[in-house]
Length: 114
Ligand code: 5GP
Ligand code: ZN
Image (cartoon, rainbow, N blue to C red; front, side, top):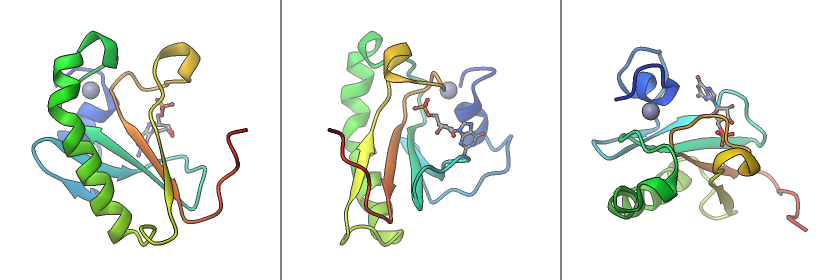
């Protein structure tokens, strides 16, 4: 747990937040500022800031993140219609919160990346 990290604080229960999924490896919450009808954040419980600085930790947790994404895509009703997963990294990636997380967007037709 990293002091002053919003996602570590949420996992520790210091900020009241609905958990759509939670175990000792990762948890899923709704994004506070959704950009799609369904906008979830799939977050490892370990405080990993930048993937490239912690490749071994990333390898340990990646299957748990994808497994949680599959689980909540089904519980949130987007498994049939589809969804998009995004991980922003550092400045050029537009990362605001320096604790690794995967966005799951869906519930509507998303814009093209072209
Ligand atoms: P990033 O830009 O780092 O990839 O995404 C960070 C996301 O975290 C943003 O979409 C932002 O809306 C979301 N976020 C920031 N603070 C909070 C919070 O306190 N609670 C929740 N649920 N989401 C947050
Ligand atoms: Zn953290």
